[in-house]
Length: 469
Figure (cartoon, rainbow, N blue to C red):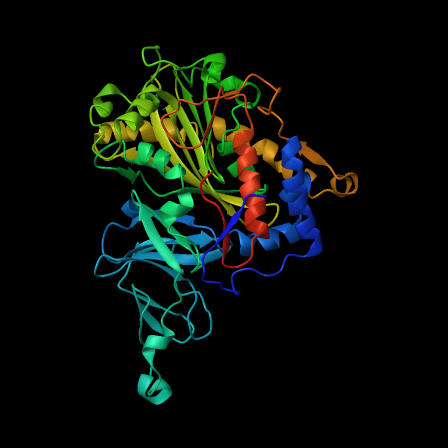
């Protein structure tokens, strides 16, 4: 178990007591990781899932939206923390709020559209009306029904903390949570690298795709932490149709990085600066001309220059992917795409995948359209990669919730990259933070995810795992 820090601000509302069975499962993770093992039940046990809603999603910083989705005053989108809906708004003064989607009068849902623009939200039950910052502004027949009640005490409930990072809006329900950059630890260096690469930043290209898969949320987080081993089997057909320009064996050359506890990533990249191959995740040179070190360091810029693929996960369920792709190799050369996504829990055996396509602001309209279509044909509900990935996760979840798995104490193997296993070796001269390994035949990135997960599940209100190694 990693050491914990005490915020000094205990809040007993944040987490309920773990049942003995759930605590035993977390202890099995802690003990098993030294052998490269985790219990399969974490992918399907309903008691574990209920504890996750409170101890993970009720505490961690969770991605909500990108600022470009709510550019104008009055814009809003409806998003989730765990299974609960929140309205992300930009008020009349341009400030961003994350509001619990429940009327203070009877708890009725106040927002009935996924997105839009409105100066107010009106509850359909009794008509209580709120401004875009969550303040109660009035209700029908106020004088007769409610005169004398203080409106200030009846505004919409808000997330405990909200912060924006390169336009990425995160929120937490826990007032004791550390600042977002502290929570990200070394992962902030890599998010700076991707989202600060263009001096004008990024914007979303259209509304997010949403689709439901009968899988546990941790399968997505596990995969995007750096599961590159599956590329040569599950995605073998992608190479045969020319969707990706780098051969599989060469693509596996790169780095696995445990950026900070819980947060992991993988780079496919040239080992040396003068090696041939896609640079800057495959974005064209005309776009790369806008990439500079105004917002990032020269070291970060050089890492981006050498990179073919970036894939990473911010704990718990926010994932990023940048790489060259094409939906039609016969007519279009691969181009850089950038997607961000969340694995929204809908029960121990179901997730709703939210998938945004993102472009750098300095891209031309034609370049944005090309990267959008390349992403749509590969990493979307009907994309060639997406359909491959989600299929195995269905049976991972079934195994995790199976009677046989429980009775056999079934464990999953995460040994790759441990001392004496495989070809991955530690790297000491990497310019960024974290524990770094060359090559991508390595599973320490996932072990990092599950160690932090177990530490979060077992830490008490007001206590937090360390955020740096």
